[in-house]
Image (cartoon, rainbow, N blue to C red; front, side, top):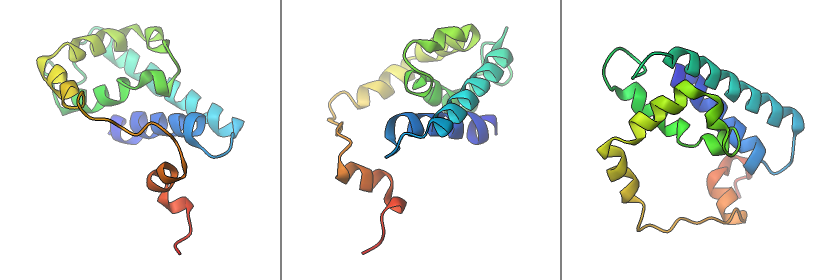
Length: 132
């Protein structure tokens, strides 16, 4: 539940208000960045002395959290994951798994649209546009 109701949503909002929102709202940018940082701190504290999120085995919780932590440069800002040494160590362990390399390889031959133009905004945020 921590990943689904905390880490994920606040990370997503941090990215949205700092990188994608149509207007710069300093209050929202600060609020969601600070909440993301708080969630990272909770996770960092939890991971102290642990190899995995829950118990002694790799689980779906590690997989779900890894996906968000993989985007730490977008969520927190470039290079800030190092501020959370226990997350960094855990992430490196998960990231070194052969399945991660296979998953990353899936996208290597795909070209993703990078421009945030009107078409992209309409597809990403359809509820912001009135139905014609």
